[in-house]
Length: 268
Image (cartoon, rainbow, N blue to C red; front, side, top):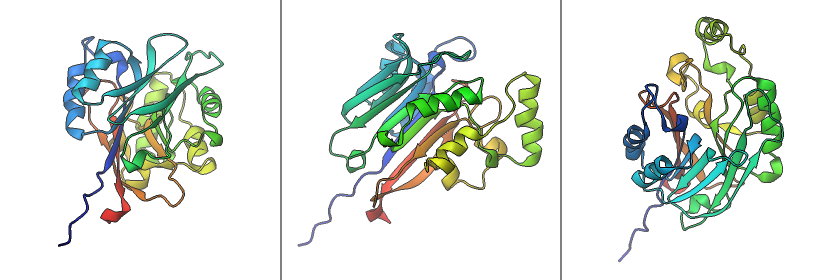
């Protein structure tokens, strides 16, 4: 009698800026975030603007993500964090050596153990780059990210734009228009171009959703996409990107979440 081998489960990664677990009215958003993210059945959640406190523990418990790593920024309890269903066998947080007007930044990297084949030989990272100046963002990512680190999944709030996300009309009226009205930095694209065109990372959302534009891709209140999941597949990778989508957080935080799902080639 022949027996079917058990199917290899998909692997799902999510990222969201949790805004120190406070919503726009000044109240806790952790229960709302848990209700939004819970049905997604995430394997890994990477967050920015987190506090290493009871709210972070509550969110991890609610999502059944029992393994955690926190990367504080210069000794504080505020920073980036990762929660996982799979054991974290190594983690390292690197803080920026410069302190621009936008403040210190950091990148948290980790590797997972356990028996899920997707995590084998992959390094994951989360970062939150400067919110004021593209030159500072470029300095930070060049300091954090080295090809020698071999990061395979890079998630986070990059505070940077991708030019092809926007129609001409939307770009001039919303993207550039809002920034001009709020006296923010005018649109620049060097950071995402460096990651994709120069360093060869794959923008997961754009790769699978090349026709979506304008408000369809927005992840922040300015109507732009600044939250990303970037990929560097393994050589002869047996896993492919199945889907990548934006999750409306209904203003629980000032960012939407981004989720990517990976599927083993045997399912194709």
